Image 1 (tube, rainbow, N blue to C red):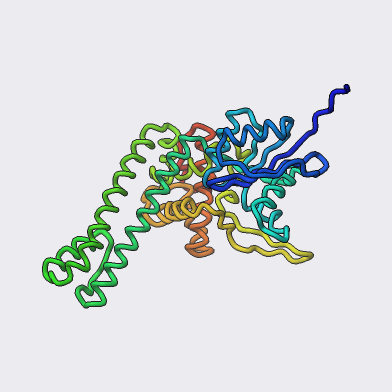
Image 2: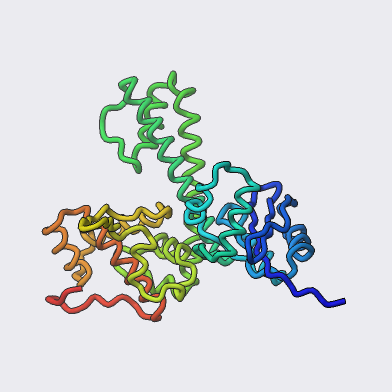
Length: 349
């Protein structure tokens, strides 16, 4: 009996917490298998080895459990690819019915024709630091909500009409409770939650400071004006692997800080910055740019360049441009193993 020629196959995995829908197609797009298995690396490896032993590519979208499954399947020698979910969505949305089975088949087809954008999967250490940063960021948002709630209460009852600056306000609320004990049952729980959040935020910040202090790349990046440990670590976890960018100038579009271009026929116009999903990174870079433009005392070619933009185009445009420049500079320092150079006064950045 003649030995059968191996069939090249492509696998699509539509992952959810409990189960993963699997679809396998051949090089001609013929569906060879479709089913669901538990979202477990061993179960997925078993079904792929059984149904698609000669698979060329295995595709999954970015998601909450994707990093764990991607690393586990890679460790088992499978050719798994993590696809940018925003890119894949455009292709999957063309199907009439949105189901997990159809999505798995759509992902398998994208693997077959090669029409996908591969997403970077963070290393475990980078994922850990990023999780610390995200947790701190969320706690700060919650603390802000508590402060705003207390502000609303004291103002609505006329208990305080002066400045409610964040640093002083908790002490003001304590004084209000002491002078007006009837409002204690209303304000004390809010104040307790605020204080608990503040303590945990401080604990996260201590851990992040220690991580930055032990990382030589972070310390070199922190030589840039306006860049502290939070911005440095957020940038490093957003990029993860600096060598995947062939040019530092590609950081602007990647972080959503470069103007988008819309062109049709003879018309071409700018549509504002891209606003990539990493809002935390963008906001930190904008804050760092604001510090460079308004608070840094030392002269630098970067600040001089930003101030010229400020005078010509206004503060917001200048701050976005400086934020983009900061990302470019940090990447160049990271790759080159250098530190920030202030330049010579009179020369442009």
